[in-house]
Length: 358
Ligand SMILES: Nc1nc2c(ncn2[C@@H]2O[C@H](COP(=O)(O)OP(=O)(O)OP(=O)(O)O)[C@@H](O)[C@H]2O)c(=O)[nH]1
Ligand SMILES: [Mg+2]
Image 1: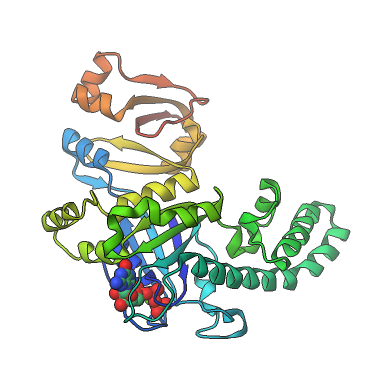
Image 2: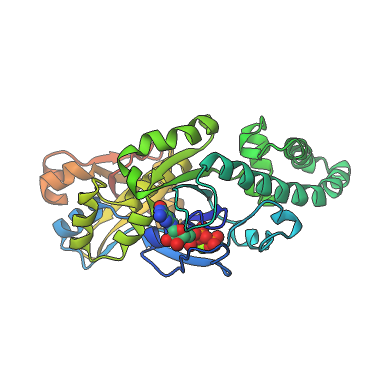
């Protein structure tokens, strides 16, 4: 399951975003540090392909992919030195797949805080960078000594040294000049700024028809290093409280389509390079998440390690073609089902059945 950790200044809308995506459960309040303990929630990834194929196969169960969200307390300038709630909650998001910056761009004089997302971004990154610098400084000497004795540790030690230099200069690792290899070597240290970033620009209700314009300053500042998504977290959180039919009507009135979750997941999967393949049958129809570029045996391994070990071939058909054919049998009769081997790169939306031998 993909996991996302939210960071931001107090009152930026982290808990409201959590509610919008996870369907509620977090206290969102107009005072700083409303969140004292991390909120953890799981959401089903909306995916019509699963629903349609489940209907076609009369599956007993339809299993969507799920994602996890972790909402922590707000950070303030000086958090690394204990200001506000300090930065101890950052530990709760060390192991997430991506960090979500919640940047406030809504103006509301009743709610303390600046409405300038770039100011939020700067303060936030300073604190994350300082937290990482602390982590790196605690390790770098020890790692150097270890590498002197064991050359296999050299890449890690060198990467730590490079990270220390970038962080000390105030640059988060993901925005630094560190190579992909160096960043991979840093993975065991769980640095916060070494993770992919998705920035959510939280705009006011009055700006929902100008999302692209509101996202632009952050987009420019990020210079392609992060995914940037603008939304009115408030409206989306209100929508998430409603019954599905009412929700659709409510979002429609704002011209917001399906709402926050599909857009968020789409941006997040893009950021992380994730793809979905499907399996369908009477027992269940299910969405499985793989990395972009994964070959058929790797996809099989997501279901079961035996499938990967004993992989022979994968019967494969695009979900739309299968649906149009109406069943596996008919799709096969029409020659739509391809028999793919171990070098086949799985495409998003492939429906697969694995042949294996153990
Ligand atoms: N007007 C307006 N208010 C918003 C918006 N997003 C959030 N709020 C309000 O701002 C306040 C703070 O939101 P939260 O979601 O609690 O913020 P947070 O980032 O979790 O704050 P902490 O947990 O204190 O760090 C709440 O009263 C929200 O209702 C918005 O887009 N517009
Ligand atoms: Mg909160």
